[in-house]
Image (cartoon, rainbow, N blue to C red; front, side, top):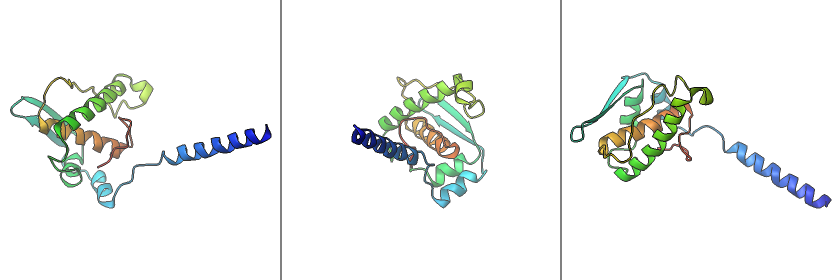
Length: 150
């Protein structure tokens, strides 16, 4: 019985240490750190002429990050972007509607009106997805079950 308890205790400690080491910050290059800390232009207009949908993001440094760090347009499929955006928007809106629970009243100021049944076009989905990646990396947030990578 003593052997079982000590083995269980050791296994629990190993799992605890592994879980703690996985909670470290997101790894970033020096170039990305510089861009994230820059102020640059503070708004990006996301629009698709064919679908008439528009999003305006007012976030210092996002434009610089988008043109210098983000993967280029065409790297992701539209289906991939739509699926990720649906998850990110759902989590964003949950936080925006419950600021006391998430402590992000200033981070999640407004909910996002995004309907996964609507085809917003590639450009809208691409820039919205990249804003979510930028936001998560800049503010060390998680809007999905995976680490936001570039």
